[in-house]
Length: 157
Image 1: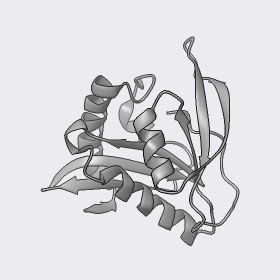
Image 2: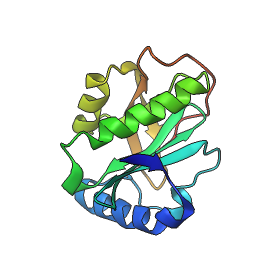
Image 3: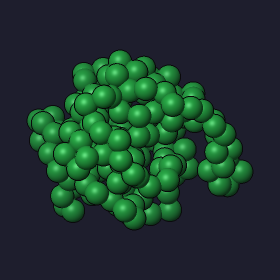
Image 4: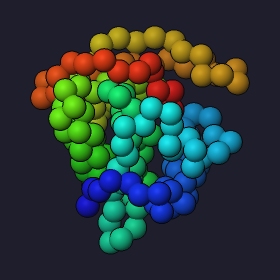
């Protein structure tokens, strides 16, 4: 089940984020305040995926930027990331926006998901993510079902 994230969900979202970080290194830099990181400035909305009442995934939209998208290791390979991304796409389209996102070029499984769902790579660039971290990212636009629109700068997750 995908639903809007509530404030009471944040502790479980942080715990899942810690598990994801340990398993796959996302986010690139562990935030000093993970709950605040999950609630960035410009947040339009955030959603969680649940299985049997347990939070197994998270996604956010900041303007047209898809951000804070992650799925717990135990829930991977079950379509959870795709369902979350489709929900974000619908919300962006309802607001007249075409969603965009950045992904590290080394995150092969995420890249495969975006391309399988019809996202289009629009470019690649090197970005400075602070703390001595220069990272190559691909920029993607959502599928044709969403309209183009303005959005904030890159979300560096």
